[in-house]
Length: 513
Ligand code: SF4
Image (tube, rainbow, N blue to C red; front, top):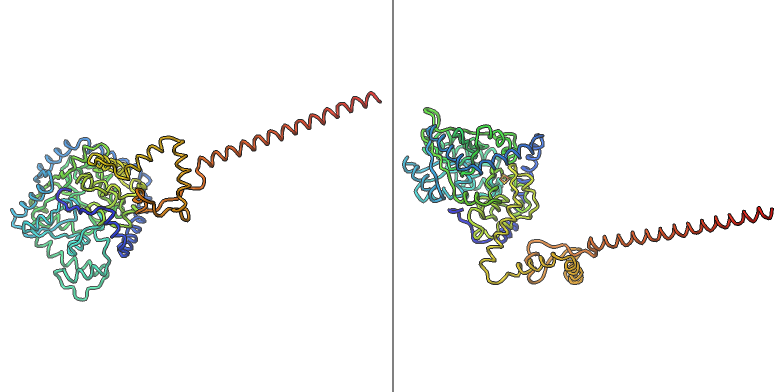
């Protein structure tokens, strides 16, 4: 993300620190399990869920194929309805546009609706540098902002905080009376509401992101749960919406699909509590000035990649985070990006380049749970493997000497390419593993292979491989069959002999008789 501060420490280092935080793991485990259960219930109610997912995927695929045409159509329709459209190539351009609009209206404070896209470009920091205070109005975002913290979940940015921590934070920072504030959710929400109400009533400029925009009507859509978005979208005189260029849908009818997919996948609800649509400006109703900023910031680069482009289907529902075993244990901060979890592991490297995001495509067990729940069917494991290949290619291109891991992999590829080599390696491995294997597991591999067991253990090689078991089974069956055949043969011979003896006895009997 040009503009965002991506930390130099890689995912493994950050994840190790997060794993040591037991409070964080408890909060995450509880929250993700609750959302998972709710999602499964409401998804199970729809018999056509798979057809909806397929429709969502197909619409997004069409949008990406004809993106240039749809964007121009959207621009024309927003302008026709009285809005202004700006194009921003990167974070700097976008931040500049928002700052100029705030300055043009003498705004020293703007109210904001939770928006990952504005977090991606560090808009709040850019506004602060220009003397404009951006106030987050989503409760969780407000908690993160007041604590000078970073969001750790797409949908629940303060998932890493518990109620007691939030009460202490509110006591220190809210501009309202917080004496006697308890840590009950209703009391915390009430204090935040009193604090924010003043901001809503005094702000002249609001800034939002956009969940969707409909090309053929010029309508922009924001979905939210608290009503703070509705306040921002209707009270201030000026509304600025920052939208990634991929957030389009072609027609109004397409919204039918996404407004079913998104709430069920994100909060486990049948519909979002607040779904706001607006088309340009209307005298006497809502903002008098509307600016739509269409942001690229690396998205056209993603679009150019045949496999990676499906990442742009994402509707930021966060279902993939809630099922990811890696995310559930490390939380969002370890990903070092505003996009955590599986979507972050594929989007961030594509936006900022694999050379900067280095280890992020490896922040996954490739179990495929994210692919199964994604409402727009992004094949996240496929993109992860694709990005890992790019990381490897890059290493190869920039190093003269092979790393031990690369040498190991090349040796393995050579062994796996031939059955006899493979079986010989298994026999040698079985003999060589005895000092390392305990109770069927190898906890630490030596030398160049040690990296493999840094974050996991490995199963010990079994006493018998499948092929050996199969060959043994075939030998046993052949032996049994041969024994059976010999027994049958002997029985037949005995029967024949007895019959012959009887026959000759009969003849003799008649003669003598
Ligand atoms: S990748 Fe799919 S599951 Fe994950 S946030 Fe995006 S749309 Fe949701």
